[in-house]
Length: 116
Image (cartoon, rainbow, N blue to C red; front, side):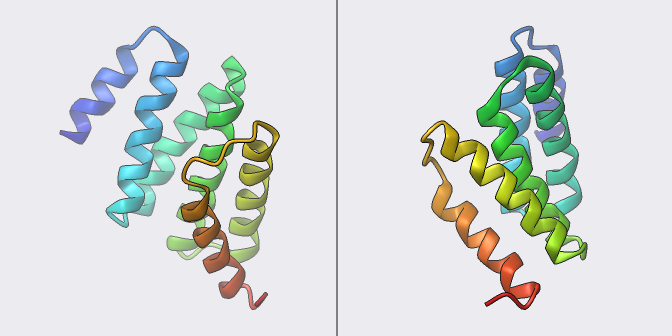
């Protein structure tokens, strides 16, 4: 089913619809604790967000990349940087959707970096 979602998402004409589809796939990767899957989809979201100026999706993609970095054993400081950039992007738009979850992920990265 997830592969079907990727297939459908790739064919959507509207950039924001493609970004939304791949964002949902990235979130699914996080929920399933699959950092590689989350990262692959978040990278697509980030590319679409930059190319089509979709700041909300850029913020959420950065946060998901931070989560995937830490969960895959990457440097905690790199994960923190992703989280900070993503949360700042969302704050510019006064967006609060899922922010409590994103802050929990950031707290996990801060703890892993010894910044508690």
